[in-house]
Image (cartoon, rainbow, N blue to C red; front, side, top):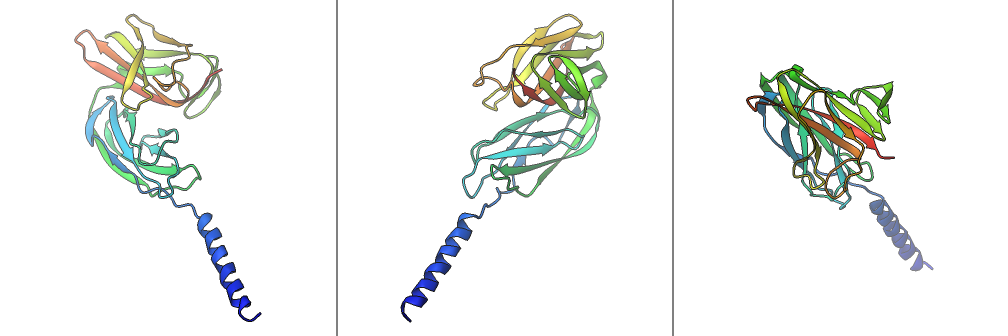
Length: 234
């Protein structure tokens, strides 16, 4: 009996250690973010970010662009590089903050990148007017809020100066490798009836996504605006 008792105690301690280790969830590594650190206000820039999870959990990336806009990606495999797009409406210095979060809600340290927008292409010439700052139900704003939630179809409307001759409407590609033009309007009012269910393998048209508009004047100078929204398809 005296020999069995130490063995039993050692076994119990080992099992407790295994259970503790099994319940441990390690956070992802601090993301590495890369992209332009200087540019023009009103121009959309691409930033890449990557992190790994020690437990092999799926992770997502959450951005704070420093201008009041925030965005979280969908969950993806550990170590997969993600591309995000953003433009700043006003010239100034901004700090991008991004962290990785695994599927068990463990968060990494926050990575930062300072960017300067010393030049400006005024966005008074081109701006997404709808949907903006509200919950939209089948194209009708039913509740004001910071940010955008769109339920069902919606008409994307652009406010543009008289010098704009063409506007392209773009959505992010599912591969994370760029944006695809979904509609082009060459006469005001510049609008896009977003009423189609696109191939999920081609573009991101539901959940958290972004709408980018690019406008061109007679000399093909480019103006742009981008918003992040949550799209619910019905």
